[in-house]
Every structure is written in structure tokens, then in C-alpha cells.
Amino acid sequence: MPTAAHGDGSRWEVRGWDNSGSPLPKRRFADKGEAERHAAAITNDLAEGDYIDPRDSRTTVKVWAADWLSAQGGDGSTAENRERYVRLHIVPGIGDRELGQVERRPSIVQNFLKGLEDKGLSIGYRYNVFIALSSIFAAAVEDRLIKRNPCHSRSVTKPKIPPRTLVPWEFQRVNSVILGLPERLRAAGWVGFGAGLRQGEIFGIAESDIDFRRRIVRVRQQVKLLKSGVKVFALPKGGKTREVPMDDLLAEKLAQHLSDFPSVRVSLPWGTPAAKPKSFRLLFTDVDGNALLRSTFNLTVWKPALVSAGVIPPPIRAQKFEASPEDGMHALRHAFAAALIDGGCSIKDLAAYLGHADEAFTLRTYVHLMPKSDERARSAISRALLAADRPAPGGVLPAV
Image (cartoon, rainbow, N blue to C red):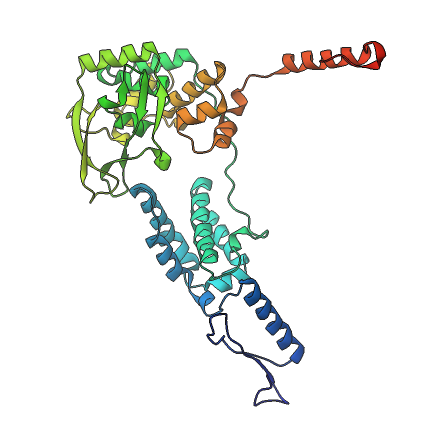
């Protein structure tokens, strides 16, 4: 429509209504052709159901991130991490920007990521912040505040965690480290190696989780330490329970452990500090009968066992133990996976036993441990070449 300023300046105004009959925001143009193209684009978006009201896209990242946080689920630790990424990095970095502005200029995201790198934050931490930011914009797309997620732009280079090749412990080292654990916690090492449980899952295993008749270990809860310093019971990682086969030797060791060190009833909140407590008769506790604390266990129990097995040197005087991130208690879990792969266990079954949500992740993590099939490949090729070189009468190749 011509404006009152027709003949000079912004002479053309685009007006209209959305599919619900509400008036759309007006916009003026100096050029009639440009105004017509804008009107045609809006008409097409309305017809396709893709129209985004520019007034909605003016919502700031800070305001939308707060709404996004309030709608998220998950356990207490995960929620605390999300809140920390938003509060410490996303809001100070781009919180005052409008969603639509960031959508139009993905370079804002790239500059934000560069700022995180300049602060010296680890690649893993920066990756987690990026995933949170991308999730915030993905929710804005779903709620029709913006059309595209700027984190998916080709000009944005997301932090990429370099692949890591796991080198599983040899069984001799497994045995030496486990024997270096205090007798009352030695079976915890055998559970880690014999059933592939995560450390928190080992700390949370209850007497009722050991089914001696069916020869299985049920993984139904773990002990988690929240950022607030509160210990809670929670579902295993990913919110999935599972069952792991238990061989006769592991069953024997657990039965002996329960005979020598009866289980202890421990009560902790479920999931969050304010939740109603749940009680389990835990197989492994500290000397006071409390749920094990990861940091204390690693420092006073696990590191001395590594020293006794010759994995790391003893501390000199009052110095701390040598850092050994590849030799944490999870090394027993990797040794478990390596043993199953060596025994011919399928990736599908291994993923189920380890509690992985994605079989592809299991394959990527342990593919280098898969037995090579060079000889089988040679034999198959030899049979095919032989059949091609010596065709059967009548020119028909024999079955290979």
C-alpha cells in the first residue's frame, strides 16, 4: 500500500494478517519491488505454515535460556551442569542478543566459541557449552521463534573432541590392582571387571541387585555427588536400568564378600536433595557405613592400589599422587569390554551390558579391539578367484 509519504522516502508499506486473523507488524520500503518481494515471502510462509513473527524473534537469548532451563528434565547433576553453562558462559557471552539477530548472524556464535577457547577452557567443557547453546536455539526453532538454528551454520565450527584410542588393561594388571584394594572393598573391583559397571553404579549396588539363582547383576541405581555436595541415589547414566550376566567365579566372590562383610542399609534422597529418601542395603560403604564418595575413594583407596600394583609411583613425602586419568576405576570397565569382544560378544549385546544408549557409540569406542578378519577375507577371495578361474562345464560358475 502507498504510504502518506508517497513520492518521497519509505513510500510503500506492507500490511497483512496472519492465519488467525491477527494483524502482522507493518514494514515500510522505499522501493515498490522490494515491498512486493517482502509481501510475497510472507504470503508464502503463511501458506506453508512457516511464518515467524519478527516480534517473537526479538526475545533475548537470556530470557529464552531461562525458559528453556525451566522446562528441562534429567537428574540433579545434569540440571546443575546446564544451569552452570548458561549462567557462567551463555548469558554473559550473548545473553543480551536477540534470537533473530543471532539467527541472521551466525558469526556471533562463532565469536562466542572463540571467546571460550581464549579463556583456556578444555575442549570437552567447550563442547558441552556448545551442546547446551545449540539445544537452546533448537527449542526456539521448535517454538517458532526463529527459523534456523545458527549453531548448525556452516560458518560455525563446533568444538570437536579428538578421538581417543582406549588401551585396555592386561588381565595381570587387573588382578594386581584389585588385590591392592582393602579386603572389604576388593569385591568392588571384581564387580567393575566382571560386570562392567561404572564407578557410581558399583557404589550403588545393593544386595537385592545380585540374583544368584539367575546368575545376573541388576544395575538399577547409582550413587551421585551433586555439585552442591549432596550425595543422592539416582538411575544409572542415561536413565536406563539393565541386567548383566554373572559368571560362577564372580558369583562366588560376591557370596564370600556378603558373608565376610554384610550389606549395610543406606538412605539417600532420590535424584535431588529435596526428594524423599530411598534405602538400599549396599554391598560397599565406607568404614562408617555411609555411601562411598568418589573423591575420597579415589584418593584413599584407588590410588594406593595403583601404587601397590606398580601402575603409578608412590608419592614423595607429602606430595600428591601422580595424575593418571587413564587408570581410573573405569579401566576395569574397559577391560570387561575387551574380554567380551575377545570372546566373540556382539556389539549389540556389549552395548546392552555396558548401558550404552547407542550401539554406534560402543562400536566407535571399541572398534580397534575387534579381531581382524584378514585370514577370513583371504579365504573368501581365494574361493571366488578359484571359481572364476575354473568355471564348471557349461560356463556356469560353481557356488562359492
